Image (cartoon, rainbow, N blue to C red; front, top):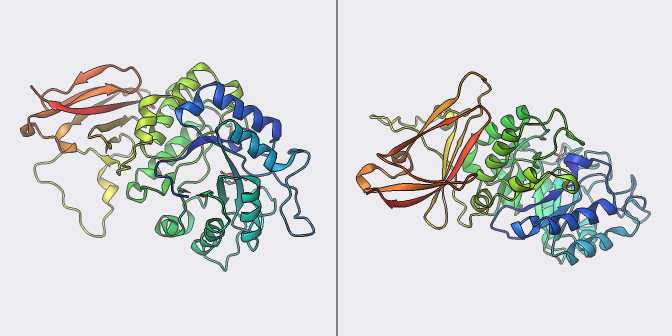
Length: 395
Ligand code: GLA
């Protein structure tokens, strides 16, 4: 399935792990609608690992666990569809899923057909217990082709954690998104780790095959399967802003039946979602201060080496001529408040153009015009600023 903006939705894994069942899915579908999350764009309800019995049946078919899903998967899919949502499921390119349930290697066509017959719209495809004699790109091609011939449009969400050079071959498969990181947990350390790894791989993101930085931990508050130590409100804000800005699919991972108003407001932030869902999908870039003698890129050296990964100032050219600006303080020192300077010539808007940016703050709505080609911000640790900049005359 071709989808030209990152997928938005909710996934069971981060909070519920193996503890999933029909009523959880039905209730969560209701909540996506009643909270306005569906209207905001979150359309996929995805059941992750641990939904089936531990063995295939006598015909080698996957069997939904009748205790967890007493009416089967078609029933769940029909309910999800009746709410105007789409339905996602999970399997794995190996012999077993990461949780030890039967997976799809050698069963790709049967499983793709089963998913299609249940009404599945999205398949997350993991990478555990795969045969070591078959390279990753073949494993993903095997299922990709089965999905493309199963008679239903099923969005392919590859989940090989960036391993085995996924970034080089993943677009060949037709996957719409690819997990470019290891698993997240609900802590600042994990958020920072995943974000900085993505800041070194901006060129591998792109239209139609989006870097999936893993499901969101926003609003988990240390509860659930990957709960761990939890995060502060600023940390969740910066996490969501980074994932949105870097074009990751946004899969909510908290228990949406119990989320706070603050969590809901963050997940529905219009400006961040607008940046994430930009239809032009252009690569984000670092706004580095221009030096008198611009550094040459020496072949063989790391292009990203010269950029500060802990204090990135990023920009993205959006589809309507505006420019998204994101300024992130990922440093961990309590003592310093980072004095960040955004220079407009670093985005291609030198003072000699006679133009400047009018910045609208994604969180407060405040509007400010940049004067004299640059603007300063003071940003505490783990916090961020995000703006949409409109190109306007300087005078
Ligand atoms: C892997 C994936 C996770 C989740 C689990 C399920 O770790 O990366 O996102 O799907 O498997 O077992």
